[in-house]
Amino acid sequence: MNALKTIAEFIDTLNEQVGKAVGWLTTALVLIVCYDVFTRYLLNQSSIGVQELEWHLFAVIFLIGAAYTLKHDRHVRVDVLYTNFSPKTKAWVNLLGSLVFLIPFAVLVIWASQNFVGNSWRIGEVSPDPGGLPARYLLKACIPAGFVLLLLQGVSLAATSLLVILKRDQLAK
Image (cartoon, rainbow, N blue to C red):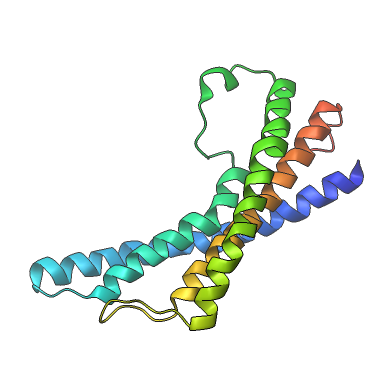
């Protein structure tokens, strides 16, 4: 049981650090959007590169930050029933949800995105728009990277839930 706790703690620490780093991208995104609005509406100028940078940053924040969101239980969930469950019942829901839905889906996305990302890297994909950003393959690489982090967090959630179910919650976070 200590091995489960150690694995969960390692994964949680990793996703905490990655999530905090990615969180700073939200500040950059806000500043870039403000710049875009200023130049577009006050200076009557627009840049495809700046607009693409906005959605590239949003995609990175969403993909790489998803595991951090799951770690802090801030993801979208229908809480009508879950909120009133006991900690042990919540642990069962989290364990089964992780094993049946989250982990298999993450593995599927990682597997399915390999050719998509690989082809983008092979051709050195760039924006098709004039003035667009180079290195679009870096953005596409965030798909499997984000789902690897999400997969790991699913393993942590399953491990922690199992500890609660087995009444080893003093070992759980």
